[in-house]
Length: 348
Ligand SMILES: [Zn+2]
Ligand SMILES: [Zn+2]
Image 1 (cartoon, protein in one colour):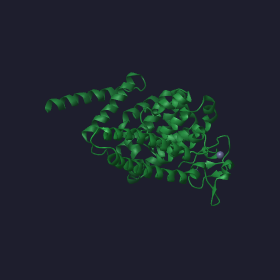
Image 2: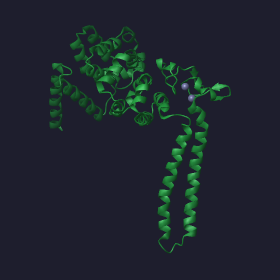
Image 3: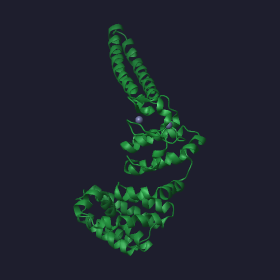
Image 4: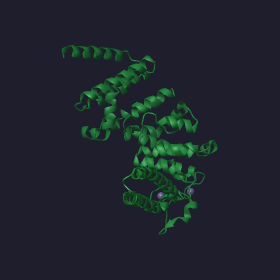
């Protein structure tokens, strides 16, 4: 779990400063949680409710099984089989069971979130997402966010981003392509404003995670942020960091082990990196990048992966046509590739 500035705010009461952490899950909590103490340890509302919720979950599972089996047996024993009543009784059973399950699950969330307002679930859900990397938690968080009024959202905006940005960066590769869509809608901000928050308020964290805790697709994300905010600075800093002496002087094994993801992205998006270096006039960095990429052995790739690579190059070309990046070399490489593909088709 990351240690960020948000540790000072109570995860459940974002107007309160936290006075400690939950002894079980580590969420920052304040003195309002004092009543919830187990064996002299302060715990949060969620952990306090958790044993009851687990017990109830077991009851639901056993209950559903028992009710289904008894009903099926009763139908076959009691309803005369010579007419169609047996089938009808059986069919009626299905919606009844579904209703019971839905009701049971609603009751289960009531037990798990007992004593918590809907806005109090927001920060814990983000933290669950950050810690587990399970995108399902991000979806539930969005559902809860949707229920908040404009005033409630304004009140939690600051702690929300303090929690959300690290969680998104640490799990960026696990999010689907339209992860921003609902978030922007519910927070009532546009894409550029969100990108500016990443670039301006969380710059150090962004670069740190992208370089030192390399996650898939983060370099692409940084390029996107730089372009959308028209901020070359962020890309400049990023390129400087990935060719810093710390990384350049690493032994091959260490480089491969810790920076495999980074090397792969340098390799995949090399054209993009080079064109940015040219645009920003980063000669030394371009040389260092070339040297780093040379140290990367691409794994023997199946044909599908080569296609994926080509698609990636097509995207770069598209961006160039839109004027987002500019390098004449890329067009030449793409043309050459087309010729090669044509030749290959003719041969076969
Ligand atoms: Zn807890
Ligand atoms: Zn609190």
